[in-house]
Length: 518
Ligand SMILES: [Zn+2]
Image 1 (cartoon, helix red, strand yellow):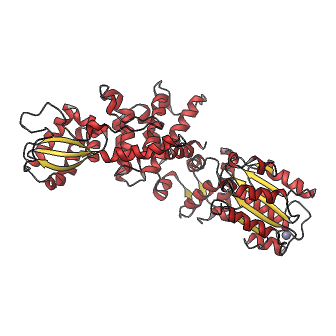
Image 2 (cartoon, protein in one colour; image 1 turned 60 degrees about the vertical axis):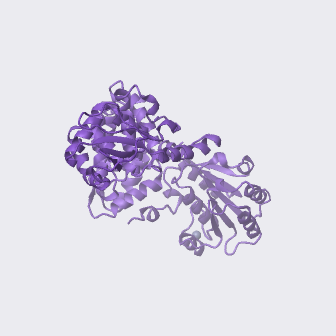
Image 3 (cartoon, helix red, strand yellow; image 1 turned 90 degrees about the horizontal axis):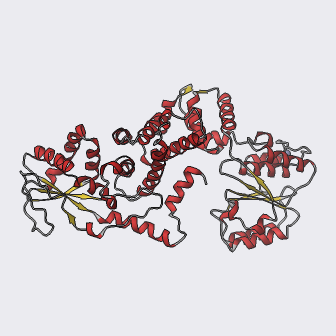
C-alpha cells in the first residue's frame, strides 16, 4: 500500500495528470509520424516527467499501435511495463555524471536496437552532468543515428547548456494546482474504496507543493493504516507529524510575540517526541502560507493575522526559523535551536534592548561573530545575593565545592520543574545549559549562546534561579556562566567558506529553497 505512487504510475498519455499541454502535443506528433531525435522534459520534481518519458518510449517501440497510445499488449509494450525493455536505457545523470559515462553511452548508440526500431535513452536529471560530459552529449545529439532517441529530463533547466537545449524539443511540466491535486487524491481514494476528511486532503495538498509523487507517497502512508476514514489525528499519530492545528497555534503565538505560549508548544513537541526539524519546516511553510494569504487580501486568512504587527512578527519568525534550521547542525539538542528561534522573536526586543550585541541575529545569512571578550568565564552580575559571598573573579583560585557537580546535575531536572512553575522562559534556558563545576559555593554552568548569557545576566532571573537551587541543595549557592566558545566557532567556521565562495550559505539556501521552491 505504501507503493501507491508506483501502483498508480500512469501507463498511458491519458493517465498523465495535469500536463495536457504536453501529452496532447506529443500524441498529435506521434499520429502524424513526426518523431524528434531529442526531447527535453523540464519542470518541478514529481510532476510526471519520467513517467511521460517511459510512456513515450513505450509508444515509440510498440509493435502494433497506429494510434497515439501504445497497444499495451505486444511483447515490447509488456517488456516496457515490466521495466525490462532492453531498447530503453534509463540513466540517472546524478550518479553517472562523468565524461566516461557519456562516452560509453555514445559508443552504445552505434549499436542497433535489439528488438524494436529505436534505441531510447532516458537521461534523468541531465543538468547534473559534469562540464566535460555535456560536449560529449552534444556531439551525440548533433550527429544522431536514425535509430537513436534521447529523452532528457531536468528539474533545473537553467543548468542545461543552451547548445543542448537548441537540439531538443522542450516540454514544460508544471506543478499541480490544489484542485488538480485534490482530484488526483480523490480518484485514488475512490479506487482504494477509502475516504479522507477534507482537512487531511488539505494537509497533503499543502505539504506536497504541487508534486504528485510526494502527495501520493504521503497518501500511501496513510492508506497503509487500517482506518476506513483518514482523519487529521492519524497524521499526528502515524506520520509523527505535528497536527496542522498545533502548527497554527504555534504561529498564532509567534504572531502575537507570545513567548510563553510558543514555548509551551515547543515543550509539547519535545515531550511527545516529534521531530524538531520537521516541525520547523512545517512552521515555515505555514507562516509563508499565512503571509502570502494576507498579502493577497484573502478573507479567510486566520483571525490572528488581522493585527497590524502579525505580518512583521511572522516575517521575523520565518527568518528565525531559517536560522534555526542552520543551527540544528550545531546545537547539542535540536529543540534548543527551536527555542532560540522563539526567544529571538518573542523575548529579545522587549526584554533586553540594552544588549543587542550579544543577541543572536535572526536575519537570514546573518553570521555569528564570536565575541573574544566572552571566551573566558564571565561573571554574571555584580549584585550578589547577600547570603552568598561568592568569588566571581575569573582569576580566583579553584576552591573545593560545597557540593559535588554530580549533586548539582542530579537536582538540575528538579530545578527546571521548580522554575518552570513561575517562569517557563527561564526553565527553557536552564535546559540548554549544563553545570560543569563547583568552586566553593559557586556553581559554574556552561552556556553555548550569547542569548543565554544575556538572559542570566539579568539580576531578577539570576536571583530566582540561585534561590531555587540553594533550596534544592540545602546550601546557599551562586551561579556563574561560562561561555562555551566551541559552538560559536563551529557556526562561524561553517558560514565562512560560504561567504568567500558563492556568497550563499548552502544550508540556508537549501532551507529557503525547500520552503519556497525557488
Ligand atoms: Zn504495443
